[in-house]
Image 1 (cartoon, rainbow, N blue to C red):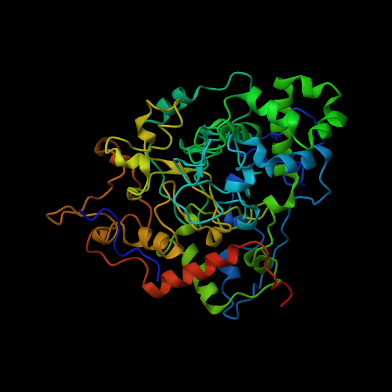
Image 2: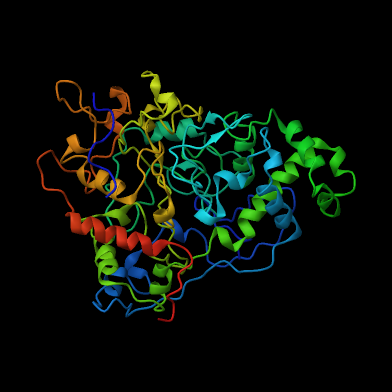
Length: 478
């Protein structure tokens, strides 16, 4: 049996808009801070191209590669890191926080790789002896400061008695799913899952996100908060806690642990490196850079609802408030990515990673309409990643774009075959849940034998454009 695809191979940071509320959310906890309201409220999910200062269809008319309608982007304010954030930076880079003594937060979220995986492994190794295999490749920690908490349905006012997720999921059953099309406003009132952190949105704040890897037996493998607190009390920077939290903090393990997670959270919010917005595309939006012919063609294809339609999920326009695009709608999709049989967990044919309904997330396990759905990640710095999708199957952008382009028209080039030559499509999701897979959005709405939406040349052009989303562009002012 041909288990793997055979042809998809490579030739002010203090303020965080809450996308699900008209208020503002600060996830650091522990220590208060002043919030600078810089850009309105829920513009990220309510982008209206017709109201934008200059819509992309007008911007990309110029064949010279220049943007004839530059915009002003509102970036987070850059300030020196607070004492709490500086402490978080030290914790983030400290391998002594792990059971092995060899793994820090930065080990899996490499600053040199835009806080994504440090290499092209399918998943990272960890645990007490650094021999345990994780379930999923680490998502990037960059550009999460505007991520709203997990929810189902449209944004609502925060209140003390929010509707339980199970109840919202029941309300969503039977609701027609809107087709996503690039160039149109997102369906803001859709009863769909969105927001949250990790591939399955199981945590809402940076503090809770930081706790997960600390305790995960396949990652930093601490036995509990007291284990982490003991390590913090022995750390070289232990005395740095005292000026912030008082001289007795090291003798209060529960509080010490909580405040350490607060510090990690604050580091991610304040440090500019987590949300630089200095890619070539950002500079092009501002009229400070010129795109090449291939990049310009790729941008058109990315935004063309009849071709790539990438912007249907990976929003490419600035918000109505001038915030730079995050290149994600932060919603969840079941894409039917092929099973990665290189993963140890997948040696058991009965095991399936089904995202929103398990195994790491338990509260939606009975909501089977969400089985197989995973968070749509940002495409910023995607060209720097060495591993893609929730199961780490693919290792370059050509494989990724080919998957979207060929999944339905030439499934034999994407999925494995059995001994008789039968193609096993959607082989990483039980048959009962395959109706959840997106077959409505272009180019995933095609049938076997149809012409692919993109030619090989157009695939290369889209990849050229994706490379303009890397941080650290030096071409501004060309």
